[in-house]
Each structure stands twice: as structure tokens, then as C-alpha cells.
Image (cartoon, rainbow, N blue to C red; front, top):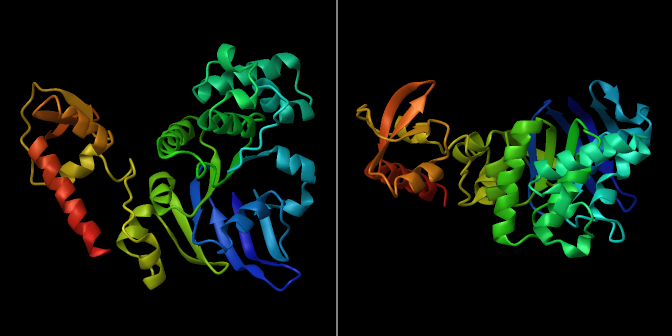
Length: 320
């Protein structure tokens, strides 16, 4: 969907922020741009909506050069969420969300319906929050409004520049979980910048790890963790563990253990349930049956869950 072909960005002072970048971002993908400060990840993100123009090379969206789009229409059709949130302080929540739909000349009825839909989608009751000002919201609530505003005109692409880094740890984890749940519903192409590898492992379908304006490795979280391309990747990911729902599920635990008993009659959980949630249920039950497509594939016990986590920790120490 988004294609970078030999893209470079060089500033007037000679700084080469991005060098000969070739990158393809798939439609509906949650792609993470990660790396240390100054690696070029934010520059790469901002070149997509032309907040920064490339010095050389081409960027295309659906095979059309972004320079051939009207720049206002290009940006209206790409949602953008910042770390600073940047809500208009003098506007209410609904006025903030309505900015792009109004520019696109949506009807009042359309805008109101969309605002209510989005507030509900990000977990804020429309009747409660529609008329509030940003100063009346917590940091996490403001960031939810930022996400809602970015989605207001139903763009195909969502750019997120370290959007959760200013939040407290509890709010940050909640927003990470919420954006994952939201992505399952809306299926947008999301490009997300972070320097936090725990966050990258949790959120990304793929991670593009950058250094000095170049791609060092791009792959799934699991592959990057288990097969780092070089010593830089090994050192940068450190002991970050990819605790993603894709990897850490009840089924994954069963696959890593001896064939489990298949007795019936106990509580059942989905094979796709995150292991951490399965373990919470094991606080009340000694064992739970794991179900996939209507069939019991095994039984997860407290002992087997602990055995799996022990194996994870041993694997993790190999990379520390």
C-alpha cells in the first residue's frame, strides 16, 4: 500500500536523516518503526504525509506518487496522532473531532453520528464527553480523543508518533491494549513510531528496526527476538520480551508442553486467549480446557502454565 523507493532525506546542514530507504507497508498492517533517538524513524513517518519532503526517491500510496496528490487531501486522508496530543484547547471534544469532516464539508448529521460512533469506539460515552474541553480530561482521555480525531474522516492510514510515551505506565498499557482491540475492528494501515521495544513487540505485526537512517532488520516480533540480524539488534532489544497476544496464547503454551490430558467437563477457554488471561482464570480453577474450532485441544493446568513461563524466562536469559 505504501512504498518507499530509494528514499533519502538530507537537511541543509548536511545531516542525512534517512538514507536510500526501501520499504513496503502492507494494507491493513500494524508496522512499527523503532530504533534509538536520531535513527530516522520519525522522519520516515512524517514523509508519508509530507510533513517532511524527501530529498531523493519516491513514496507512493496505492501506486500513486504522494507528490501527485493535493497536499490537503493527502493529509485529510491520513490520520495523525502525536505524542503531544495537540488538541485545540479552546474547542470542545466534539469540535476537535469534527475538524477534518468539516473541512471535507460533511453534513452536520453525518458529523454528529461520526462523533458519537468514535467516542463510543474509544470507550468514552458521547453524552458525557462530547461537550468537555481538553483541560477537563485526563492524559489518557485526551489521547483517546486524539485517536478519535485522527479517525474522524475514516482514513485508510493512521500515523502514530510515540503517542503513548507521555502517559503513566497504567494508562499507557491500557491505551496499547485498546489500540490493538480497535485495530481488529477498523483494520487500518497503522505506522507507529516508538523507541520502546516492549511496546514494539506487543503492538506490531512487523517491526522495522532502524539505525543511522537505514533499516537494520524488518520482520515479525518473534523473528526479531529469536533471530536478531546482528549485534546492534541483539543489544537494542535487550531483554524486551515479545509478550504479544499473537505469540503468548493458551495454544502456544500447550504446543510447548507434553501432550496434555483431554478430559472434559471443566471450564473452557479459547485457544487464542492471551496466556496472561488464562493464568488469571487458573487462580480459580486447577485446570481449564483449551478449545479451538469447537474441539478440545488440551488442558492447561497451573503446573503446565508455570512450566511454560519457566521456559520463556530461560529463553529470555539467553539474550540478556
